[in-house]
Length: 260
Image 1 (spheres, rainbow, N blue to C red):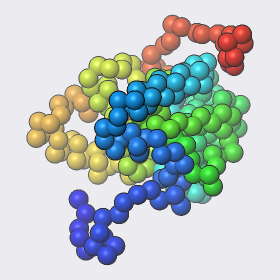
Image 2 (image 1 turned 60 degrees about the horizontal axis):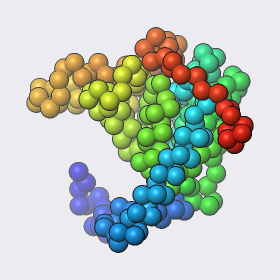
Image 3 (image 1 turned 60 degrees about the vertical axis):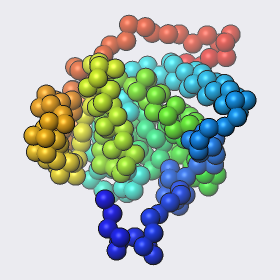
Image 4 (image 1 turned 180 degrees about the vertical axis):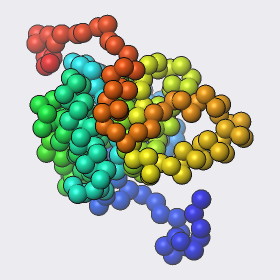
C-alpha cells in the first residue's frame, strides 16, 4: 500500500507517535499481551486482569442511559467544517436525551462532547490510557481509560445505541468496518451507523459499491448497513427511529459503590 520512495529512509514507520493525540499510551500491558505466548502463570494473571478491567468498564458505563458514540479525527480545528458538524450533532443528540461518548480527544471528539455539554447533556470520553502529557478535552463529564484497546471497543458497542462516524484515520475506519461486520453477522441489531462528511467518504463509498459488490466480496444489501448524510437533523432522526430501545433501566446502588 505504500511506495518505497515515500518512506523516510526507505523504512516502514513503527512504534507510537505520542506527539499525536491518542497515538501513544503509558500502559505496556496490551503490547506484552500481543507479543506472543507467556508462561501459564503470566497468562492466567493476565486473564484475571482483563476480567477486572471488563468489570471496571461495566461499572463505569452501566448507568449512562441511551448513548451514541461519535468517531472522527483529532486533527480538525474549531473553524473546520467537520468540527462544526460534530458540534451540532452532539448538541442535537443531547437535546434528544442521548449521552454522547467519544474518545475524549480534540478535533471531532471535542466538538461532539462540546455540543452535548452546551445542550446540558451527559458527555463521556472513553479511551486507552494516554501518555502522561496528554489530557482529555475540557467538555467531558467523565473520562474512562483502559489498558486494553479491545476492551474499549467492546464497551463502545455494548453501551451505544448508534455510531456517528465523521472523517478520521485508521482508528475511525476500524470502528466503522468492525460495527458493519457485527451488524452483517447479526451480532448487533437495530444499530444505526450514520456516516457524515460525505465528500470525504465518497471515494471509499465508490470503492465499496463499484469494486466490492461486483467482485462478490459483499452483497448489494450490505450497502444499507450505513446511512450517509451531512444533515445533523436527519442523522439524529435516523438514530431516534432506528435504534433499539432498552427494556432494562438499571438503577445505581450506592451500597455497591455505584454512581448513576
